[in-house]
Length: 493
Image (cartoon, rainbow, N blue to C red):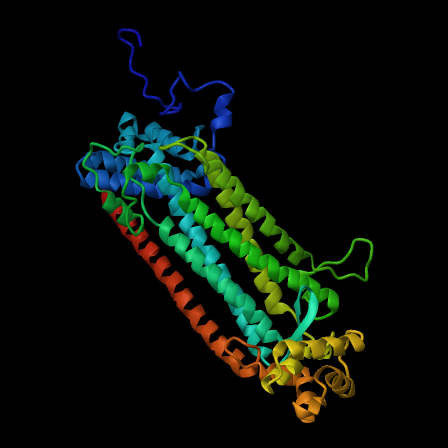
């Protein structure tokens, strides 16, 4: 600046980089402004809470704070698309405020860094995404429970290694996935609780000499507390890794459900609604479970996102490194894809038709009741391995299908040296060969017998209610904080 020249107020240019660092091809490479549209609202909330706190602490004059807050309202009204160019949304919003207020607008950045600011914005937005994802798991669990409740007595084939294994019920099968998705819900809520801590006030990483109130900004933003250590607050991204891991784990659960439904559709065990199917472009007779195949594929995307995120974080030194700018999109892409896949899976389950007669007819295929006969022999005192040998030989003689009672008796004579009926009454053998009776006998905790499934349904319903309440409580806390922040802002504008 030459003598007598008025100082440049920075209007229309970056308030952070100025001339020295404002040009060159690397500027575009460094910019995350377009991708940051996702955290535009979060940044405005963080800015407001920070300015309110600075005013309360007499770090920034009340009148200046009011001007800044009024400028932030104008920036919000104009929208992300109206922001000036910048490296990121944080810089662009600050530039827009300075353009409106003048140099005094730069006081909004007092006692903070973009390092703690961006960490706060990511946490602020991600916690909403995690609650949305958790609500998606609730909807899927409700669909699974509702359909299971209608099919407690619907017998169907059960598989291991994709081979007929033992008969079970449709309710038992569906509740097996409800249990898994319930754990996915718990992981998402755990991730939420560790995400919902405020890093604001940590500044670049070494804190600030200003008399800030970190707990106050945490309260205004609905955080449950602060990340205590300032270096950890600015640098830590393990909350991203935990959230993405929970989402990837849920995606794997979804992939298993989708795979089962695709296989069942192939066998004629389930009829998917047209909304969740498609036809071939050349073969008009075909009905393809395309949506579920895409649900299955999302697991690969989610695992890839987690791998990319962890690889980016691996080996980063403390405290802040620009690599972190490339880490966050992995979480955004994963939460979006997995949430959408969850909704599709829930819809497919809720609208599917299950042909009970077909399922019942296939329930005993491949001599799936063999274990029941072996168990009956074991209950009569025959060592289970010996009983296993009897049934294995009977299955071989029947070509893998269910042998008749005469064949079972003949094999028992060869292996045990006595008639089968000396150990187990004929009527018992005939009963355990029936898939319905076989299922009814398996009444241990968590088993497929109707009584055992009824208990599982009760537990699943109670778990659903508890988790829905937990999500609701977290949303209520966020809403209350947002209302408090809005009230504090209104008093100063």
